[in-house]
Amino acid sequence: MDYKKAGVDIEAGYRSVELMKEHVKRTMREEVLGGLGGFSGAFSLAKIKEMEEPVLLSGTDGCGTKVKLAFLLDKHDTIGIDAVAMCVNDIACAGGEPLFFLDYIACGKNYPEKIAAIVGGVAEGCVQSDCALIGGETAEHPGLMPEDEYDLAGFAVGVVDKKDLITGSSIQAGDALIGIASTGVHSNGFSLVRKVFQMEREVLDTYHEELGKTLGEALLAPTRIYVKALRSVKEAGVRIKGCSHITGGGFYENIPRMLPDGVKAVVKKDSYEVPAIFKMLAKEGAIEEQMMYNTFNMGIGMVLAVDPADVDATIAALAKTGDSAWLIGEVADGEKGVELC
Image (cartoon, rainbow, N blue to C red; front, side, top):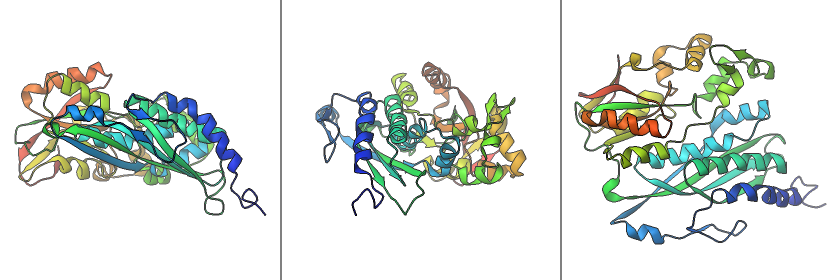
């Protein structure tokens, strides 16, 4: 008896590391010390000394049951973008810049090419957010997970000067709410998605005119990363008063997280066009409107609270990074929460 016969292929693990090295190289920053393969990732904090009062930020998350679609479609090169996005977007929400990311892949069996494809997606997410991929772990779990399945999670560390922290504390009635477009369902609500649509290859490969792509392509579209978008707003001289990353819980749970007591968010549903994938979900699943807005991002991946005088400058700055944005509402006096009208 040996480890391979017990279900863990050490040689496959070595091959996975070799295949992923080229992907990792793309994410390197000058602060990264050492190379891939050490027991820990090393990152110099020399640049942070330039800040008046540096504050470290962190975020950890996974892709949820969206990985099921990757299994069904046998497409594994974008799910890593989702894992990075879910972490670095939370850091950006606080006004921070992500510094480095580490991933964790648990699999039933280590197929080196598949693992390398997953890490390739992670690396792409890191490139999109100027974040270094400084380490990770691939754990083979025979007997615990099916051989052809895996789970993916990770965490990121970022930094912000304390004076630049976005806390929401200065939000007041009359402030404008800017919605930044999502790229689709992102990485939340897939347990409901998988109940609405039959998770069969034939169904997922069906082209839909209103989507402009197959159902599978629409659902697997990677989560938008907003790090550069929010940086562009800051560089335009706009002070972001509050920021909400629209993840699990949709509008109703996430927007209030940026609000101080005594004010509410009033969102105008007709201020932008809800993407077709959400209309399809609502129709096919007979999902009530409140549940849709309480589960999905409904086409808005981030909501910013800014001074009304900064609306045009904010939208223009977002356009520079290729992000569509709209004035979707305002802040009003009232009990903390969200009012859709």
